[in-house]
Length: 443
Image (cartoon, rainbow, N blue to C red; front, side):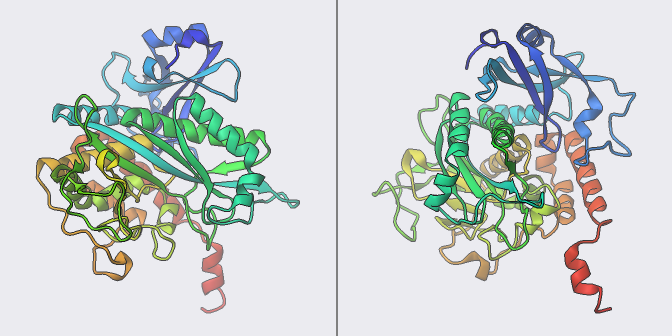
């Protein structure tokens, strides 16, 4: 990463509990000073609702004072679309330097240290899906194109946008493995190569900021709303998780034992499979999956995605190269062995999503949790436990999960629950077009 002194100005970035990027623009000299002192913000801003507004009963009200956003000098990266500008990511502290209890980035850093204490170095890659919209003659925002999966015309019509996205991510130090049209009109997917867990979470926040900014510059709109259209597929944000040894030379999910069958073969060929460590990690994720859903699918709209029929996960099962399950073992094994966690959507706070998922996996390793046999069948048609069907139900599971509470911090979980229950309650005060069409003339 480069130094702040290489730039004229900087954007200091942190996220609230919802995962919305917030921050401030600073001249370079002030940004350098911020590395030492941090920048003060009213601590109640961490609890903003998505309206946005303040909760009726926040932990930190007008009397709560300041928190400090303390930049991480290892996170500096260029903002490709703004000349002479850097982005730098911050963790939040109290003014006395102690960790701020509602900082999601600090929660992830703490979980990473827990893993390191057990000899593991966590890595994550990501598939980020999003919707691109354009304004029609009536002023409505409609899908950017009318294409579907991997369509080449969508690459041509979006060539300028795609190059902007790729260039910005590459300049920021994240290798783009590919960008393609996803299954629905205007839907694209950005694949980013694995990185350290904290760096990847920073990269996801950067990608969201970048996608909105560069797409707006070309007269369009990018949205990470999980399901923006009725009848269309939805925007997921799949994590590809692996644990390595302390010097990052060996993937600890890899195994020389040929003990996993794949429906269409595997790569590389030969004797390879999933290690006991990897299996226990899967077991931990499955064991905590209902609670994880609250964090990984964190909006009312998220549950319009988690339904059968659109290749989204609904069954708490795992399988080799099986996209009908919540956890998929991809066929690239050996050093590339990883677990694809398919529940997170594009609205997920990446720090909380990764922290909770890694903490669940670590709990499985510590308890040697058996994940059960993987399925080669269509999990939608099998008898597995289901994910929660509503945000409220998922929040109840999170509320009762002591492992995730301890890993993330009691205060952070309590305020997350408070924010999301407020969001659910507000949604219940609104009547949809579907409800009017379904009920108005029948009763």
